[in-house]
Length: 147
Image (cartoon, rainbow, N blue to C red):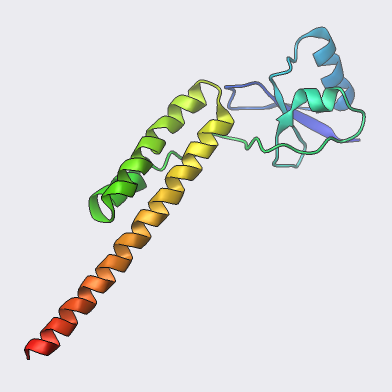
C-alpha cells in the first residue's frame, strides 16, 4: 500500500509519510482540509488531498510541484540590459510576481510565472545572440568591401 506526503498551502516542508487510512482519518476529523495537497512517497507530482481521501485506489496525479520556484530575476535583468529590451521587461514583470504568488499560497501560479519568465529570458537571449551574430557578419562584410 502506498504512503503519502501531505502539504498545506504555503508550507515549505511536507508532513509524512502517512498511510491512506491516516490521510482519510485526517480528512474525516478535520485536521487535513480539502485545500491540502498530497504526493505518493517517492513521487514528484502533487494532487488535491480530496482526490486521495475519497478514493480507495490511486488517483490520477496532479501537477503541483514541490518547493518554491526560482524567480529568474537575475537572468531577467541580464536579458534586459544586454539582449532584448521588450522580453527583458516582460520577464522582469513575471519574475517579480513569483515570490508574491508563492507567499499567498498560489503555488501553481508561482510555478507558471517562473516558467513564463524563463521562457522569455531564453527568447530574449536568443534574439540578442542572433542580432549580435548578424551585426558581426555585417561588420566583416563591410570591412571586406572597404578593403
